Length: 213
Ligand code: B1M
Image (tube, rainbow, N blue to C red; front, side, top):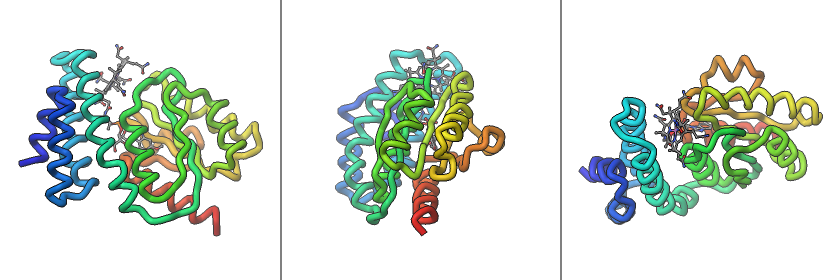
């Protein structure tokens, strides 16, 4: 099964093989979303479990992450083409102190696939940068990703800074990433938690439509 092959090559960090298999799957007419959700993401999840159990270490994780990103790059134009034109601007980033960007990049890709304009602030993004960008660029959405329990608290700071800057009623603040929960989202006063990239994109589109109406 091609999804298992993609997952295995990703785990082995074989970027070139992952790219070739992803291209093969595209040529076979498999949807970009299926390739992502049934091949690439499960492969990265296996690496995550092994990393947790000390069965693999940072170098292996990095080569797997590179393979993941290269495979995902091939899907980007397809995800975008599947989307409809929508009006809405999002600024997205991984919060301050946090360098994990694979999930954030997927969320970005899915949002672009919905026709939203996405400003990618990268990783290690301060609350001030999120808020200033949203204010200066007129973003309807601030999307924050965090993968560490030690950095997710920064999302609460983003909410506070948005209030201080007087833009809280104009933006919707979305949060996500492995340690983030619905309860945490409510606690910090953010507007939406979604558990995966596709739901994040759906929610962002919903917010933009609501704010435009
Ligand atoms: Co890091 N790391 N890491 N790491 N790493 C985790 C997160 C960890 C859970 C591993 C573990 O111990 N089990 C652990 C965190 C523990 C914790 O805080 N509870 C951890 C740690 C400890 C660390 C370091 C501290 C390790 C060290 O140096 N000792 C260090 C921190 C560096 C830093 O950030 N300051 C570190 C470093 C790294 C690498 C650089 C080696 C690499 C990152 C490479 C990169 O991103 N370019 C890395 C990786 C790859 C991982 C794991 C293995 C995989 C993360 C990943 O990309 N998953 C991870 C273990 C795991 O998650 N199981 C781990 C795949 C990705 C698709 O999933 O990002 O969750 P994810 O995104 C999902 C959803 O969460 C959601 O959508 C995506 C799927 O559709 N989502 C959103 C994400 N953002 C969203 C935003 C939204 C909505 C949904 O709305 C805005």
